[in-house]
Image (cartoon, rainbow, N blue to C red):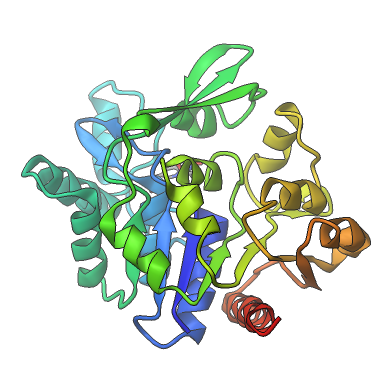
Length: 313
Ligand code: FO1
């Protein structure tokens, strides 16, 4: 079954890895958020794209979920010796990715092409697709003023209330042809358990992306990143609250209304099943926490199974 997954960073990468494990090679395309990309020390950093790439390549740091395994930080230590504030932890191995990506982008290659080449070199046999080739940056409105995404997320450790989200450059973004064909060839579309505001939100905000996905006549399923009123990882719960959304699986489901016909959530949220069904979604309650690799494969299989049931409706 050809599957198109829509993902942000760590949570999305785990389900993408599960899908990769259970699908034949080549059947998976992952469209990834690039609105958390930024420039640091002259290098173009694409954190979500790299998180998914390293995870699919089996190279991800198991503890953090981001960055590379068996990493060292000698370059960063030297940068720090020069007096720079080394708040964003770029490892020596990870830096190779940023150096090559930056060099190739400067030479005129698109981010789509660079990503395809880097991921193929790491042995990934599926398609890893940035949501667009144009630079888009998430800027958050907070009580402290406007904050760039990584400033909020890493430097200030997500301590600020998010009162609004701005996606700078989104109006100039275009759906890459590679993304359009991955969606049109897909037999199922899966929204991974990523932050619906700052991970999935920017992907859907690329002009014409939402229409492309919602007009796609195949099963479309979202997996909740909120379990028992809490985010699996990151600030999604706090962010939903401060932006006025209900912090629950049902609250997430409402954000996907009109876009999906299936919804997967944890058993802890079973009591919300009726209100989600009322949105016109078929609901699956299961063990939605992915603690290890077998969990990823099992959840992927369950999501695909729900898709095949939707297909026959
Ligand atoms: N997240 C952190 O919390 N601290 C870091 O120092 C950090 C460094 C980092 C380096 C490369 C990379 O690809 C990701 C990195 N992340 C780090 C994760 C990342 O910034 C966030 O998880 C995402 O932007 C949110 O999805």
